[in-house]
Length: 124
Image 1 (spheres, one colour):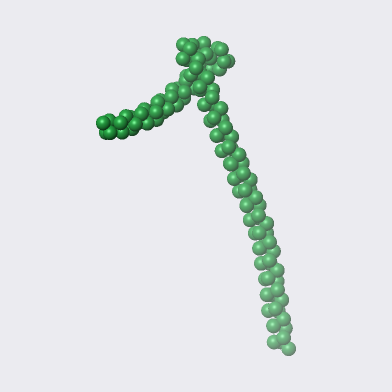
Image 2 (tube, rainbow, N blue to C red; image 1 turned 60 degrees about the vertical axis):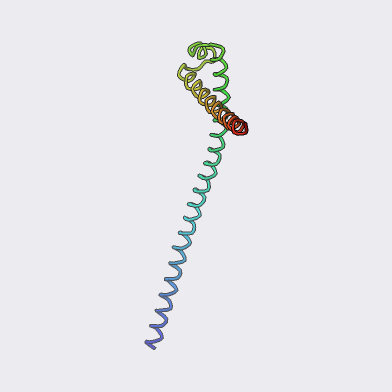
């Protein structure tokens, strides 16, 4: 009979251990779901942020083009700033952005022309 109670104690101990493990596993699973939800929320916000950054860059390019037009009309940075209600440093930054874009465009066009001219010269 001592053997039976020892077996029954072992069975009870295993059952208690299984319930404890199941409880810990359930808590771990709930925590993991919360971690995944938080990470998913971050990734969704990050994707939104990236889309908005792209839109802002496009809008800023339009602003820089407008500043470039005012500069081409020989308006000074302080006058442009007063006209648009922005700081002179913002005018200068946007003007420089416009210049960079024009330089890149001119370089791309120049490369295309030189390649074209090179072909023509070689064929003569």
